[in-house]
Image (cartoon, rainbow over all chains, first blue to last red; front, side, top):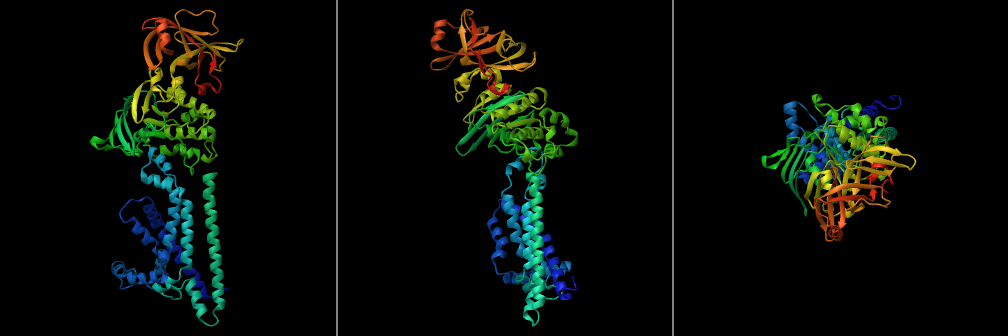
Length: 231
Length: 368
């Protein structure tokens, strides 16, 4: 691998995978909770929350990145609090890139889960209730398995979005090789310097390969789940 | 008291105002669609919060709006078999059956898995997935799943409505066995008179959200006026009989009822087996003297115990035939011509003995 990719390119690939997996993993539980809240919840301000969650989908990524910089930057209110209380610094760190990617991918994750939650037959949940299952158990042993295909689809979308995220990342955490330079930022850098075409092309191929493998894996998992339901 | 219900609930233009009590092993909630049967069982099962009222099951108060009691559905211990089986598609039959058991406190797990699986005839399905089962098999699994949660009461909301006649016939015997051998009282929602005639021990008749009659099944079924929607043809008496002998030469079976013998077409049941037959009110002719030169084989002697005008021109005449209540629907004119009055001995000539069609398979309602 490293014979084919330069150390700089290899670092970008590793970092991208790390950032994307972290973004996907960190958004999973909040994503499920948010989808459930938006689909099933009855509370004041649900619509506003819905808009807020979906905002990154329609806003220019650079705007999201700048907003993150304002909020989570060292002098931002949240960033300063995290740095003082917990020593967590996000700006210009790979964790910041993961945060930016998670926020950009979150609406995709929530949408996919919410769509499959919509198709869950509430009557099955009622039936589980009459069999003695507490609502929390109903969610864990009935609802969750039934929306698993949607969760898998959402995770893949979130992962893909994180792999390709550029605008928000570069605005929030810049383009530091080895720390915040993901595949898209590296490709961008390569296209800006003379003789960088080779590196750009290699990273493009790696990008395509990762996407294909991710799609194939999600299809395979979804098919396994479906086969259990319809066997 | 097994079931003590007193509920009021408004849903759009529909108002439920129902009150009844039942001690029956199988209580049928009978009424046309839209009469509030499902609303009522949903309130008992905890799927619906009633505006006002009380629900008590086996002396346990589940709902009492005045005292602010509302037990959530997962703590009611009431099994519910729905119209559609609602099996969990991601669990196989065995896991579906055990679902309720997972949530039953260990010391309260009394249901015998093997016995219930055997009783419902689902042993060969345990490793299958719900999507591969037939409608009848699904309902049997759904009944088993509800029973294995050790419910105090089993609600069945038209569990057979989505099945064709053949499949219904496949399930009735299991429900009968549960009624007779099981220890879980049942509530069955139905709009089919043959179905409740075959299965019910207690009947609650609902109409427009109100209880119009309730009581032991034989008593309720005797009165044609409780079944205005079903039409006169459906009313009749239930008589418990046993197979006395088979007359193979004629292809006949003789059944013994309290008042006498009934001869019917050969049925495939062993001698001594119990058979519940229904004598429909319109199939009975009354005669003052024992008939002679008549092709009918079935004549039961009895005494008139009541006369009740059903509608304009017809009268329900109730007879006591050796302890069994039999009802005949005759015209007002006949009542006057024969001078029918309470205490008069008469002969009930039975034109046909109806087995509930589902009881013995198709084409068993025959003329003798």
